[in-house]
Amino acid sequence: MTINIDDITFGLDTFGDMTHKDDGTPETAGQVLRNLVEQAVFADSLGIHAIHIGEHHRDDFAVSAPDTVLAGIATRTSSIILGTGVTVLSSEDPVRVYQRFAIIDALSNGRAEITAGRGSFTESFPLFGYNLNDYHALFEEKLELLVHLLDEKPVTWSGTIRASLTNQEVYPKTEKGRIGLRVGVGGSPESVVRAARLGIPLALAIIGGDPARFAPFSKLYRDQLQAFGRDDLPIAIHSPGHIAATDEQAVEELWPHYVASFGRIGRERGWGPITKEHFMGEVTHGSVYAGSPETVAKKIAHALSSVGAQQFDLKYSNGPMPHSQLMSSIELYGTRVMPLVREMLAGVPAR
Image (tube, rainbow, N blue to C red; front, side, top):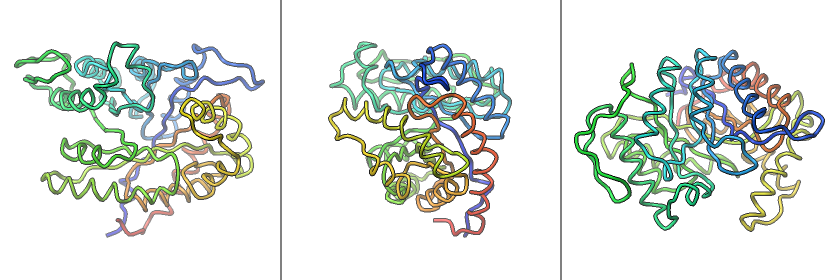
């Protein structure tokens, strides 16, 4: 059996990084958000399948409420799937998550999608009054409740972290009867098994190393789907990158912004400094997709085929890179990279 290139889709991911203007001066959060809407509208015009917007509560990201941004995008686009990357479900109320996305689904004529995850930061816990000691229970219980809510039937549910529901209807209902849901996973086997048990498509965050090392996770997921008696479900890959006319230009444009963003996060978490050598190793052999359209397409084709995934989501915003460069990267992704990947994967055996 070979890969069906009609099943391969391409998305964009952004955390709404606080960006700089072309002259190096900082943009306001308001302008970053307006630019993000323009990026999504442009991606829609290029036929890109999806855009996923992250949730953060820090000064280096402009988006604290991605669903609000998605509602703004919904009425200016026609085809692109509108999702999160991720909804930090542990510090959210699943009922409100369902309601907000049901409204986005209505505004977009059925294009809403939730990617639920724990999130890679913990600022939302004290901000919304949650205890980090409840980290695992919060996500486990809220994800199960959200799965029930997405059936759009009366919900009876009880847990330890919110009020119980008894035969409770939740409104509004969607026109197609269901909102899309994925679960974001960073590399935990337990999370992969949970996704399979609940019957949720998988989105693998691969931000370092050869993506082929995640092949065991996709195998585990498919084995567990079969064990739970479920049909096969799609797997997506999320990785950072930047596309320019040449490999040299892409690296030159991305490096200072990449090191600014990941360097700050690394200092906060006690990691060692990010070196240019390490960065170039990820560009050449790892999971930073920076280069010309041909170079990035080859890397994406390798990632999809080696992991056995059906969707690639490029995290195109990385630190304070200007809006103009982000738009150029989006254009090359939609017009050059996507067709090249499909061409490269035609006839490749499926995993």
